[in-house]
Image (tube, rainbow, N blue to C red):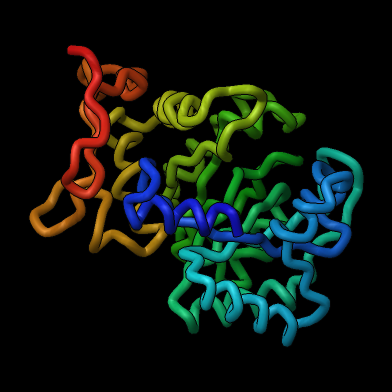
Length: 281
């Protein structure tokens, strides 16, 4: 609710901030992540940030309610938390109902996963994107081709998953490389602000991880811009430099095609064609 209010305040010009596309509350099992893993002692968060559908009709109604509230994307959690305290997993039939209802309302669906089976079930349900690469166990041999054939995008968030995955950083990067080689659409995401990092810093670091996985710098930047826009279904509005699209732009001090770390040195921010921040030259 609060993030929807913030988005509205920014869009109306009452608050200065970035253009926001938001999911609002996310769907998970009643005893699922992150309700019982991170926020079990936060009654406000449990009430306002989660949706706990008991069955398929309830899930469909909740999706319609969120659509009426104006969310841009539906977020679901599909995991039994193999990396932490055991928790309940969202029923796959409920996930399928959520995806079907969301797609009928032209809303994309992003699904948090941890295991290869989570990914397999999310793809089978019709998810538009997978949030986090496989963090528990290895990436099943057939999954890259399965994802590519289904057109399901993956947002690996390597900057955060290495903080809790039993896999090494090298193993996680290798999984992303396998997905890229198979032709899977890969977006760039940060999972917000984990482990004390500043807002945005994890996304800057993510571009470096993608380069380590075999991306060229321009390709990594494209994952954060054009690809992310396509995943969210707004490629006709934003994500590339084209006449008629929104001018949501940044300028940086150095050439990011040589070193993607340059994207962290922002000197100019333009939102919808209006300069909102100018830095030192």
